[in-house]
Image: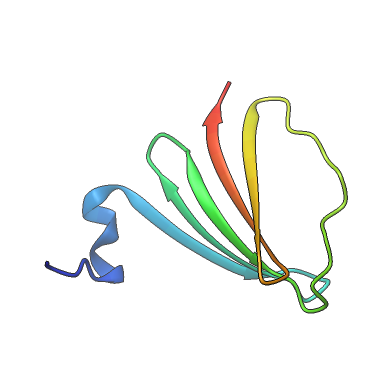
Length: 76
């Protein structure tokens, strides 16, 4: 198996964006050319995100060891 290095992801039209939010939450995003993607969210206090709605995006949330993982599954 050959590893794909982070600096070569643009060849595959994959973009990585990571941020620390104002509340200290860390978000690691991997986004494809079709705008679908995966977001790993790590909160400092193990807290849950407030309920919200996306009109044109479907999301799936997985919780593992008190951490929330958000997966953007598709655009409507």
